[in-house]
Length: 394
Ligand SMILES: [Zn+2]
Image 1 (cartoon, rainbow, N blue to C red):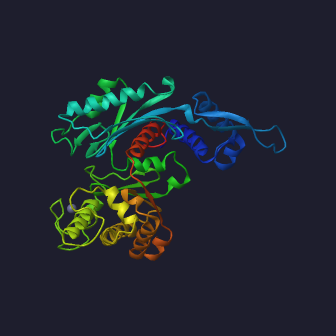
Image 2: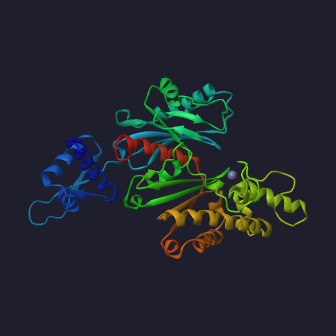
Image 3: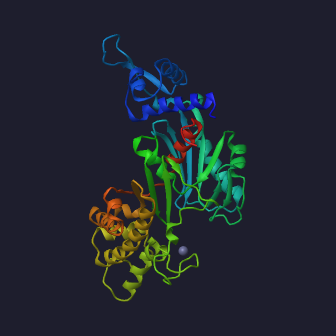
């Protein structure tokens, strides 16, 4: 049986939650929208008010008696810090309850000689951010997202691809010793999705598929704001879905993986090969080209870049559609340099995903593109930390 404290906690969350969807609410509004009694709502509002999570904002329309007091979410009632570590470097932000960024710091692609060196680098960035928290009394804690495999409960970096000797490292403990504050550690993949999901609003009660096109093709799945976690913490390998039986060899060693046909690296290599074979294009022959430049050429309708990209996205759409047919998500966010490829090209991706999807599932699907920004990941992990501490997420 659930305890009284559980009920009281879940009632409190229900009341706090209602403020994420409405600019202002009165006690009668909340009573009407919930199954709670007026005395319960009044007590919970007083508690949230005393914790500084909501504020009084004037009075509403009278329905006969006194005008009811209006309350709204106090965006600056709590602050947290988020730090995201990925290929472009380290990004950190200070955010508040409403998701507003108050300060940011970043370090571009540092080379770490050891795990200790990496930890010192992250700790230094965190200390710079702590100094910028607007109100220390309202500071909740720090969330750090790193690539690879993470044991979130223990705060351990199980495997970190950029630091081959950083196996089973107690990152949470190491950072806490250096910064003197509570730190939680999570997996980088999917962090940027939290900046879209949180603060939790109605649309977060649906299911979300987040696809990140960077070095590889990875995916994070969310249901009602919570991530799906695999058994050995290694879920989301969309890039290793086999889409051609006996096809090209992938970096993972298997044959026919999606990544071997549609990753940015494969598309760029294919375009460069064709230029070397004499195809006329703005694709450079004599120097490296990054994914931003590649999708800039796609946007500019360079015939070679466009034809290579179109072949790639046909495979990508097939891979995504297979997941849609299995899991029927409400919304797909596709993040990466591809978001700058131009609206016509992006519409083509939407059309192809729907083409490969069961008709009824494709019609209802919302597909959006998000430019890759490490700061989005930092904001996402900061909000995750904040809402976990407030018991809005677990
Ligand atoms: Zn593979």
